[in-house]
Length: 112
Length: 113
Image 1 (cartoon, chains in turn green, orange):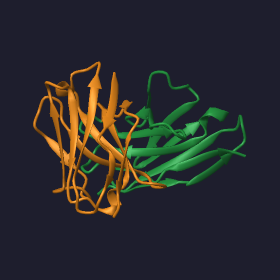
Image 2 (spheres, rainbow over the protein chains, first blue to last red; image 1 turned 45 degrees about the horizontal axis):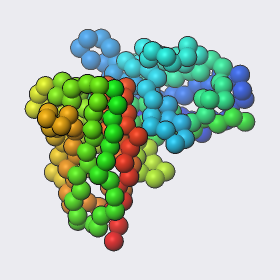
Image 3 (cartoon, rainbow over the protein chains, first blue to last red; image 1 turned 30 degrees about the horizontal axis):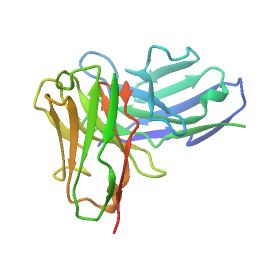
């Protein structure tokens, strides 16, 4: 199975400061169409997860542009350019390139 | 599009349960659908997938042979039939549409004697 390793697992951030979450894959997630099938989710307390980014770097409609996704080989990064209070929650990466689909461990973002 | 899960509850180890996901706003037969679960304090775990308009289904290794995903066109509903339940199947189960854009609110399944 593909293992996704997220770091850090806990990320205290000052309001307005940038934040960065890493997700490293044990295998390539590139499909024949050239896209990497890596998705980022935000999970706020008491709510179901929300998809933020798909195919590594495509932001979903309605997602603030302070969220961005980048990739370099099997290393993926979710960046928040300036953390706001509503960004508190747990962030997960997920790969949908290989069966079975798998999630990372999650990164908890909190305000310092 | 709205998804509404039901059917969760308390069940003894070795027992069975069928989860339902009522779908509104789209045709369940024409949409990729998945089940995802989250045990208390644990990461999200993908459980099962059924392909739009086709017979293909996939399962996580942890549930293969015990769980079965299906859908009913007349009721526009997705199902997850769970059998031989174990304590480690205790989780909130989410119904998810398409490529994980639309999620239900989840239904709690607790496996305990």
